[in-house]
Length: 443
Ligand code: DLL
Image (cartoon, rainbow, N blue to C red; front, side, top):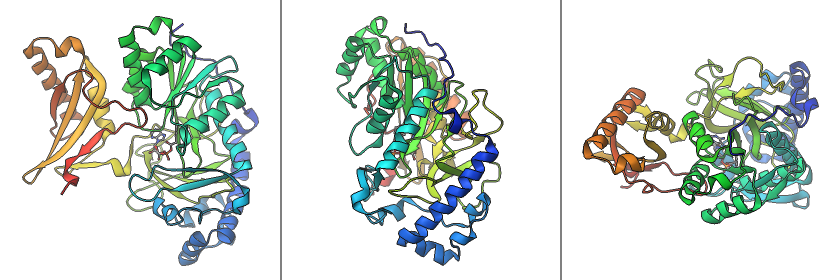
């Protein structure tokens, strides 16, 4: 055990997941027409937008016509707080989730019984694609509650028929005891929490006693070097999965065992890529990519038309050897609102992560601090060195600091100061990591 082996390619629902493109697109169009009609009839805020744009349900004749429709933004959904965005009577809503609402009112999402069935189906697809089978013991270390990660994955595991350990997030040492005592074979959480658990497993020296073989990570952005760190630290085969509560929760797209892009469940979501600045279709979807925009095709509780996710990615060209026909999106390279402007240069946290983890001796724990000294923005990266380096001679640390600074400058095109900090001293996350502290925002 504890050896990263590529699982077999299994497909939960081949009829849907491998549907020929032509058939899939006909189904999407039929569903798109229906959802636009529902939005027109049942969602006053969205009808108003359509009227203002001079477009209505009869204008949707092809899939390309989706581009005529107005966008939905997070603010639109916030404006519906709590229940004005629901397209069905309250008596048909059986579950409510909400986004955290740290920067304003929460966005509240309601699910009908059929929505929950669809969601479980999508989660079963996701987990099967990642290699989960009935024989697995699955430890869910995502928070349960309004956040969609815990309960969303929970219902998928039950549908697959594996055994679920609904541990929720936090109590990290206990997580590891449970892993050991209950023989967990699959861990599901955010990549940053996975990294924290890997570190603790190392400290507790229990790795040989664990049976973990798969890690399903999602809920936040992570890079390829972070995947390698997770695979090494936990002894798992690690896959990415993506989603957002406004559209469903996890289950919008997922990697298969090829680990090359996340298949979008296109029979339920219509994806587009746009230029964030202009709103026009992205000029090079398979290259530079753009912002992902999603339309729900089957959701009853809250249908969402052209939701601007703010997540930047690109589409992967060609077919996947796994046989699924759902278009693949790349890893999310950044959120458009995560972009830092440092002395006029655009910098994304993910670029920093990628550069850091390419340097040997850097632990996968870091924090980015942005401040302003006089009129100049300063970027400082707190980097944890491994114990061997941190407690070694001063010149070795200096050498490493210089190496990281050069890597960062090449990757970012702007100078960043590096502060090597003691192992274990940057904050550890039990959910989504807060990587950036922007001190410029205060005052
Ligand atoms: O994070 C849903 C989720 C839970 C997905 C568990 C996967 C696993 P929200 O809290 O609404 O929902 O946050 C959605 O998180 O717009 C992205 O910016 C980010 N995000 C989610 N998954 C990924 C991922 C859930 N795999 C927001 N890679 C999204 C990068 C991700 N970012």
